[in-house]
Image: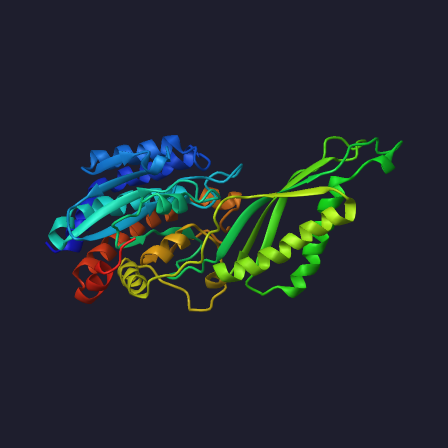
Length: 386
C-alpha cells in the first residue's frame, strides 16, 4: 500500500469521529480564548490517536500541540475553533478543527515512512485576538518548516485572498448635562463619534479599492435625556499589505481626532494587538494542495472570479511571513449564504460541510506526503524554519 492509500485508510477509521467532533464543537460555540471545551475535545482525540499532546502551550490556556512522527521535515497543521459573538460558528471553525485533527491523524500513519514530523497546533482566538501571533512570538511554531490549514467558504479557492488588518477601540469622553434644560453645559461624546463616522464616509473616496474600514458602536450613551459623556466603538482597518495598512490607519486616526476637535471631547484609541498580516501562499504548497483536492473531486473557479476577490483577514497571514504556508478555502455549497451570516452557521453542519471535513483532511494529509516525497520541495522547505 502506498503512503497516500495508507493515510486514507487511517482517516477512514476515524472519519465518523471527526464528523461527530465537528458537530459537537458547532453545538457548543466558544469565543476566543474561552474555547475550553473545544480545546479539551481536540486534545483528547489526538491523545487517543497516539499523539504526544501538550496543552496550555505558550501560556495560552486554550492552545495546544499534538505531535507524531520523528522525520526531519516538520509540518504544522493549524486548527481553529473559536466562534463569533451571537451567531456562533458562522465562519466554520468547527470544520477547520475537525479537518486539522483528521489530517494530522491520517498523516501520522505514514509520518516516519516518508520522513515527517506532524504537529497539530490548536490556535485560539482567530476572530480577533491573534492567537497565532502570540504563538509565533512565544515559540509555538519553532522548528516547523511549513504550516497549513483549510477554511470553509461557499466555494473552493486555492489561494484565498487574505489582506492585512488592525483592530482597535475608540473611546470619547465628554460631559453629561440635561439634554433639554442645560444642553450648553454638556460635551456630547456621541456627536464626536458622529463627526468621525462622517469623516470616514467622506474619506472613502480617497482610499485604495483594496482598503476596508468598518466598525460598530458599542456604547452610544446612557439615556436620551442626558448628553452622552462616554461613547465607544470598535473598528477594523484593512489594506492589501502591512505597509499599506500603516498609511490608511493614519488617515482613519485623523477622522477620529476630528470628532474630538469639533466637539471638545477627549479621544482615546485603545488597541495593543499586533496587526494581522497579508497571506503569502507558498506556490509549491498551493499547487500540491490543488492537485490533491482535485483528485478528491474538488473543482476551483476560474481565476479572477468574484469569490477569489472576496478578501478576508486572518492571523495565518502572520504565520505565512514566518514560514511557508497555505490557507485554501474549501466549499460547503452554501450560496447564497456566505461567511459571517447566521445562514452560514447552519450550513457548517450540513452534508456538504461533512464532505468538506473528509476532503479537507485527506487533501492536507496527502499534501504533507507530497511535500515530504518531492525532493526539490522537501529540500527547499528543510532550509526554512520558523
